[in-house]
Amino acid sequence: MSDMSVVVSNSLFLSAVLFTIGVLGVMIRRHPVIIFMCIELMLNAANLALVAFNDYHYSKAWPALDGQVYAFMVIAIAAAEVAVGLAIIVALFKRRERVDVDEINLLRG
Image 1 (cartoon, one colour):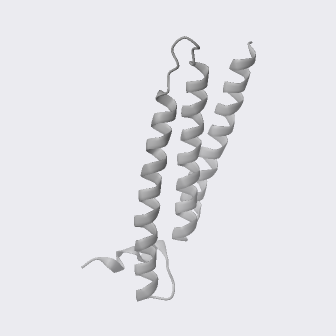
Image 2 (cartoon, rainbow, N blue to C red):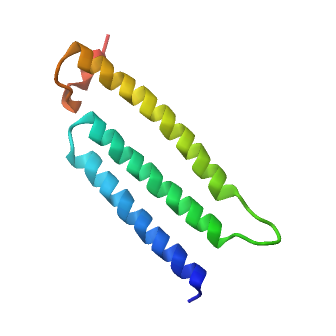
């Protein structure tokens, strides 16, 4: 096994562990801020996998930046998701002092 494949396999293992922690956090927790943090953890795990695969397929003659471009797009989407999600949480908190995911239908017209 070459050194690069060891680095990629370690990165993918870490990515899988982070993604699993994020999925468990979304499924177990009920507070919206913690759920958003777990979703961010899952997106960062996907970014780590994208960059690891890109480094594995990197060639000195023709550098491919596909993984970094996709990771940048995921970061931009995550920023928009956080902005919209936190706005919804603030709107819920203004209507009630307690924010619970089970009572999310409160904003329905």
